[in-house]
Length: 383
Image 1 (cartoon, rainbow, N blue to C red):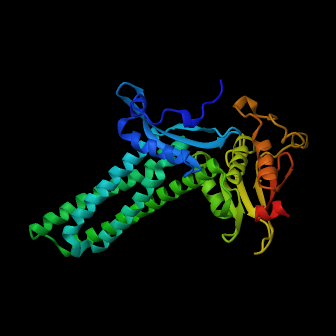
Image 2 (image 1 turned 135 degrees about the horizontal axis):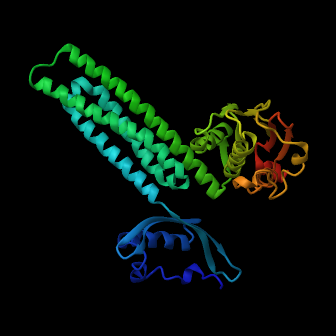
Image 3 (image 1 turned 60 degrees about the vertical axis):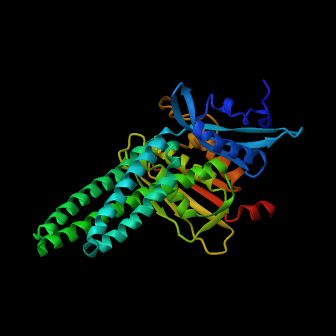
């Protein structure tokens, strides 16, 4: 069966679209698709409610790219993702934002006492809006929803406590029973509560930013400037739900000033595969271990960077080192490993990133991977 050009698909008929798209979503879906066909957008991304059964809907996200055949026909390929988890997360964030707004309104009645608190609440409200905008990537990692629920839940509980404290303070003020000690206690509780909210808002912010950047990079594979340390930290944040279930530690010794012009998505995938390999192979039956990423001597203006990835796990025998980059070779197939992790790493580094990869290991003494990459991949390729 040959593919159907997108220009011949029935995207103009509302009656046709109503058979599988929620009515309120049709207009924006048609507009995005028309812009896509007209060449205004290089890729297609739309969120809408898809009919599962009469009066039963689910939120989905359609992502696509296009290619044009020799005949001039335009075809689209992509993914249809279930984003129900995203919508649930957004709704929870909106409820939290609503509670923050209510708390701000109540605090305004005692402005002389809590002026600083109101100012901080405005800041927290802005942070929550950022979370809402970034929450569209939550569905990519199943553990993410659970991970972000914890700091958000703490914020909601803290806000509820502040509302109760404010009501008590208001009652004492209205009945002329407000004492200096009561006011001092309220101010101290407010300070501690806002510090708690701020730390958890920051924790949620870091999680969301990391997931968003890594997801965008891996789906688009765009060439861009990026800080090496930031990329690694974002990648580790996406692995946090898995790492926190272990006693293993990841340590970084990388300068904040190192910037690359390359493909951050594939490079992030390299680090994800290396960490997963350490967890499933290097630390098998080991309760706690260390992973370190180190940047060797680097000076501004250098054409290359040399990154050392090391774990102190079981190591790799000489016999297995000779086969480790062969597709489908694995020593852990019984636990679901496919043997593609290391071949993918080698292919990405050498072919996509124009770099070099070297492994050094002894059985029982951990493993080292030396990754050499050009600082500017375009200059390396054109040289």
